[in-house]
Image 1: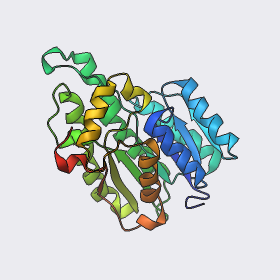
Image 2: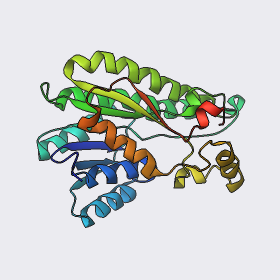
Image 3: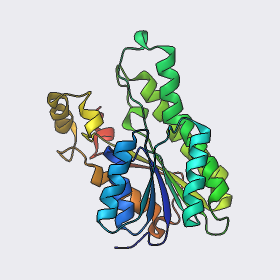
Image 4: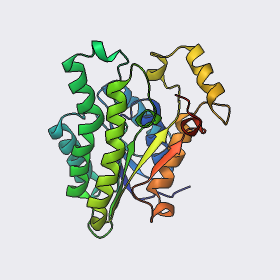
Length: 252
């Protein structure tokens, strides 16, 4: 398939998990992909996997919380390939702890990675997306933006901010033909998430999910490809749930 043939995408948090899945899916649909991740080894590993499948990708080992890092990386990607069509924001720093124990530096870093970075990538999109052709920004929110989740106050607040920012950017960037949407994944047992959740927690969430299973990076990536494609050309400001129904069922 080649729904994204000839397009150039910049994907953050693409070294592993959902971001990696999205990057691989974009490449599989013909896109050239910039792989941004703070971990250079995982970024290079994703690039290697894309290249082994005859795709094209470049690694950008950056800290997405830093405006200059994001703007420089996107500029380098565009300098080499001549365009920018898609930005997919997946990077997140997650800490689960009671609000009474949250430290200022932890809070500030989580917000910088999970929310401020979306501002920097939007600035990059405005600089490099063609005014006539437009482009696509895809953010990642969470059911935690709508549900009360103990021990996740900062994360929930960030994801609520992502949902709100998505709608605001959709209105502001619409005249530039830039569509802005957000994915809302349910429980996806990625390597990072597995470090914080036991098998028992995952089983409990599976049982509360109406479709009776947990999500996969491929589930989320398929939705990202749809939102990035021409099939979604009249969709903006949407929060697309890919959660097996857990949000509406009240599970967390």
